[in-house]
Amino acid sequence: MRVLITGGCGFLGSNLAAAFMADGDEIVILDALFRKGSASNLHWLKKQAKQHQLHFHQGDIAECEEVRSVFRRYSSFDYVCHVAGQVAMTTSLQDPRRDLQTNVVGTFNVLEAVREYCPDALVAYSSTNKVYGDLAWIRTEETETRYCLPNHPEGLDETLPLDFSTPYGCSKGAADQYVRDWARVYGLKTVVFRHSSIYGGRQFASFDQGWVGWFCQQALAQQQAHLNGLAISPFNIAGTGKQVRDVLHADDLVKLYRCAYGMRDMMVGEIFNIGGGITNSLSLLELFEILSQILQIPPLVYRNESRRASDQDCFIAAIAKAQSILGWSPQVNCEAGLKKMLSWAQELI
Image (cartoon, rainbow, N blue to C red; front, side, top):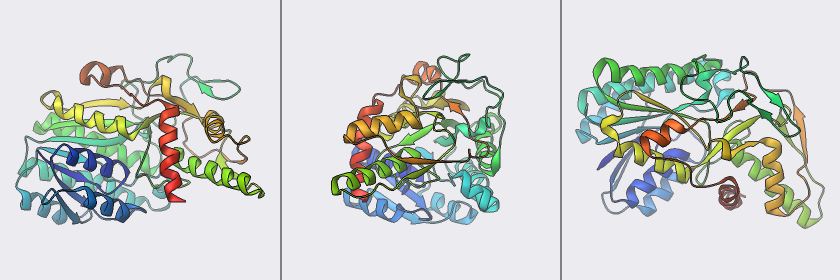
């Protein structure tokens, strides 16, 4: 099949592109190369591609004509994986206009191009759990290492009310609803994945985006200091460290997008909460313990900073709907995934 991947040189996009190319599919990437690591991911993808299998177009999805020109050139696509976006809450607070242009206007441009050029294609949109806001109204309990959701033992499902907060939550939430409504109003085949925390290879993590990868890098730095007999430099964390997310490895995410295409005729405005589920939920403190055990070093050294505004104390996706409809469930457990992530983070040092 022919697949368009917006943001195909990013973390999620490059993993999708590599997997689809391995299946023999033709891949078209539209990416502005704004993010750190995107040029490196493009180079990595080009080395794997067979002749005429990979087509790259540098462009900004916020520019309508740039999006339309890609659709005109290829006439049609079977699958549109719309994973381009501004993905950091802190960046959205600093530049809310750019956040809106990328996430809202860019998504609108993609949807309208699909409607004009390939209305039978499946459109999969990468959304976020931040569309639910800070969830302060949900009761939590605090243990020694984490916050818990006593009234939601299997996690939070898709019936949660939307409550956009921060420019990032507003822009992703608005785009999320455009994707859903273009199915209802125009009959497009669309599916929205509201992701929890994703990690894996090809992720160039930073302090404000890609927290699992970022803390893997800090753990490796402290391991190196221990091996060399150097003083340990502490890293910073926001809040108590008891905040919880369910983590999902990129390998499982690729399988999810494949499952959605296999069930494409059922994907008309469907929405799924996606994450590692309750069995792959971690607090920061629990993550640090696992990392120190894997690396065989003393407990990680860190400093606490103020809690981030609009942060969720605990989000764990209830994934029963994805399991039931798509036949999908995570296969990479936390420890195996973290070992893979440490190997990738080691390459970045």
